[in-house]
Image 1: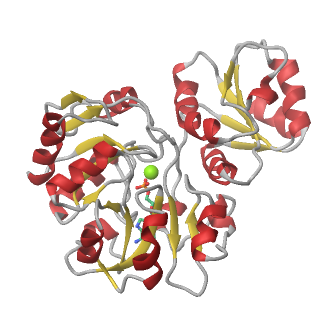
Image 2 (image 1 turned 90 degrees about the horizontal axis):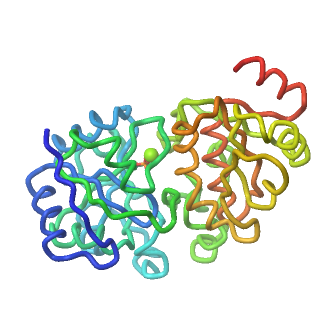
Amino acid sequence: MITRIVKVDQDNPSSEAIKEGVTVLQDGGLVIFPTETVYGIGCNALSAESALRIFSVKKRPADNPLIVHISNMEMLHRIARNVPEIVERRWEEFWPGPLTIIFEASSIVPPEVTGGLSTVAVRMPSNILARSIIEQSGLPVAAPSANISTRPSITSSDYAIQEFNGSVDLIYDAGKCSLGLESTVIDIRGQKPLLLRAGSMNVEDISSIFGEVLVDDIARGIKYSERPVSPGTKYKHYSPVKPLALIQDKSLFKKIMTEYGNDGRFLFIGLDEMLNGGGKNKIFLGDSKNLKDAARNLFSSFREIDSSECTAAIIHEFPEEKEGLAIMNRVRKASSAVIRTQSDFNSFLESL
Ligand code: AMP
Ligand code: MG
């Protein structure tokens, strides 16, 4: 199929550019658009047929539900039942923004979108282009991250064009996403809010609205469950094709970098201060004092692994607070080896 590629300013989109996306959504087609988190691949959330096309283009397992994006609260009430009182009262403190909340689904949401669950995940994005196409189409928009399943999410339109030109109706060529990591997913139906997926909105900020958030090892990306509350957590995610090793000890990371920094086989990825010193193959993610830059740059660094000459990449552990919680979740899931000791690293070398 022919994909229309529409160049647009995501902060100040022209009415013609918005109209193109609106028409595709209303006709049941697929649109790749930027949000503040990552690029999404979207369709009319009320159309089972369009949703099935998303699963097929992304090669996504059918039981991994889609997040439905809205532009106003009236849309929420169309797709969700029994909206908790705290959401009615305080939604303007977190929406529009990178927080996804699980609600009981209304009967108009097809099971293809919810992965057969009785619930629906909903978010109101802050990106102006995203919100404009949703608002003007009058449709809730089902949109998972715009990447082939298991691959790193897409945070820049160049990668969206590379991966999906010819398989969707429209791609907005709108540059980079401002946050770069997916939304945080929470379930607030129980006594305490439960973190289902760490993401761009900090647990610290969510707790200030909803009360103390329960963070388990599944949300951290440490533990695996065959039947998690959030089906997406059981699948392989975010992975470069080449091996990525996570070094869990700072001094071991530095030692390995000193030894192998000039060895063309390895690409080192990390915070600026961790990459200081010798060696040439490095991706500097940002300052350690503010992890926002590292969050924004992480997925493109995973994609650079595959386009570089290296055989394998090496990344260090991040402190699990603020953005660090979501960063570590992505790093754990993307890594093919977790290295704690020199002998772990030697085995990794032998495996290459
Ligand atoms: P993605 O679309 O790639 O950003 O992934 C969406 C995430 O939201 C996945 O981890 C899904 O498992 C999760 N999700 C979507 N809908 C639900 C739901 N109804 N209940 C629990 N988790 C959900
Ligand atoms: Mg995804």
